[in-house]
Image 1 (cartoon, one colour):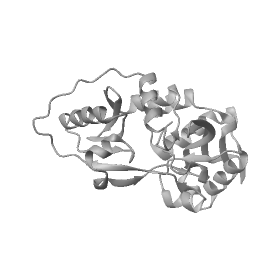
Image 2: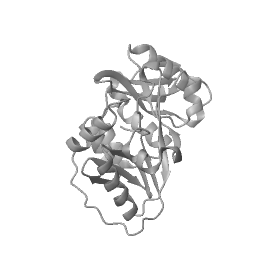
Image 3: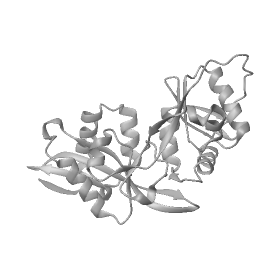
Image 4: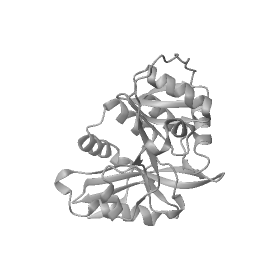
Length: 259
């Protein structure tokens, strides 16, 4: 078994592995491989010359207490079925960790597996069940852009920190979710859930809550520090664990799934 960084000649094999393991939408797959490939940050395992496992360690940053720090964010951790349960992914994770002098982060598919490999959950969000609104006055939406979404995100997470998103990361999110935007807030909508809701003040929280109820959203996820959590009654929220890291320096830092 050989563990090493990927080569440009692995491009098609990396795509085939991702497609086989994740049954990914082809449009997403082409978008990712056109914009997020950095071969020196892809770790692969080969057996008898065949690429059998891989992970992508995307170079990113996180912010905390007014400063930005480098990190690597693991996505696409995949092993062909016939090569699983042999410790290959654990070796790739170990190689990744040893290759950088900064923390490694990820959003886990199987949390106990990553815990066994030295990762801990950095933070949680709160989930609230929304009752249908009565006599709700419709609230106007506002136009959103990468700049406006990013400004809200950074300010909303300024207290405890968060994994930062570049313009390409925002494009993956806005392509994948319906976006509801109000002045000073936004929500990502999927299957009647607001899976990420950021608001900056009470007025934005009230507008967003009204808009969510108007749209028939049944569940909303938000930060414990959010004015929306205050409005809904923080004690009623159910914690949902978020991303993980190798370093205690990221305790409290918000890490959501992204590309």
